[in-house]
Length: 329
Image 1: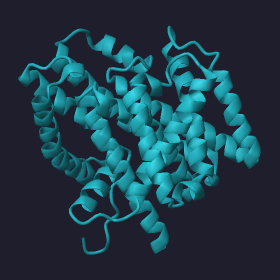
Image 2: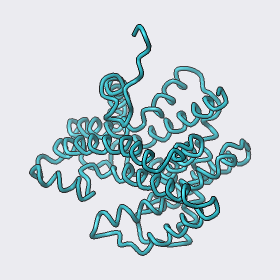
Image 3: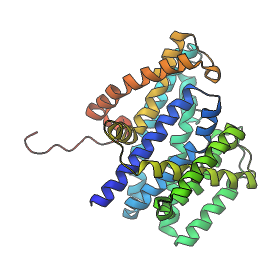
Image 4: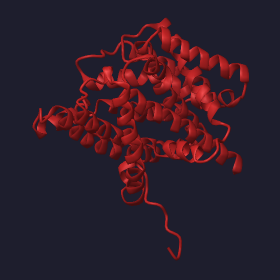
């Protein structure tokens, strides 16, 4: 039990690092740090999600129950984040649509919060993989994932948002498969490989730029294989630096951020967007260092009480259940 708990603790720390990188990448949307983050940070979430499913094997209880649990875990946060996306858009741009327009964006998957593609894609990837794992043997599940990737390359990325979302989701499916079947390799600690993976990701960020890691583009087989390599290397690096438990309070901060990554993902936009309006920042591609530090500081200050309020009274907004109360409480 303790071994499994320690494993989950280090995964929480890894997710904490990644969600912090997400916040930084949204505040400063240019420069070498931004480029390096975008080489691997979104693929890493899919790899780690596959790793977690490999540990829990929760899909074995049946696809129907798995679907309902994932729908609860992703569906309510989707609606919550979309509502915050409307408020964020109004803060930044004023009222540009009526309520029907905002509702249409949500139902058509055009999104009011454009970062919600991640929630939808992760939901679809988990469902597709669970179905493959239940229906097929291991090697055929991998082959089916490869076939789904190939099929997605023929789906149009523009015009119909649903097809575009499906196509981009399929491009992240192999990362999920790597996490599910490659847990032992990802957990093996090799100092030379840790150094190599960190250096490789840094080099990719410095020389290739953010478009290198964008999978929502027309399918290019060779480039995609290189992207997968860098995505896995980046994930391996983050998982490895998360294994040693850091001293407090860093351990508590990273673990807490990882356990509440969906809350931070959904709420940090409206915080830094509001601060940006007050500071007169409209283009995050040119965010000055001083302004970005102010935005980041406000996010750091406000997220803990937001996390506490949601976990204490509104956990369903993050796809969580109310904590069980013991006798006497």
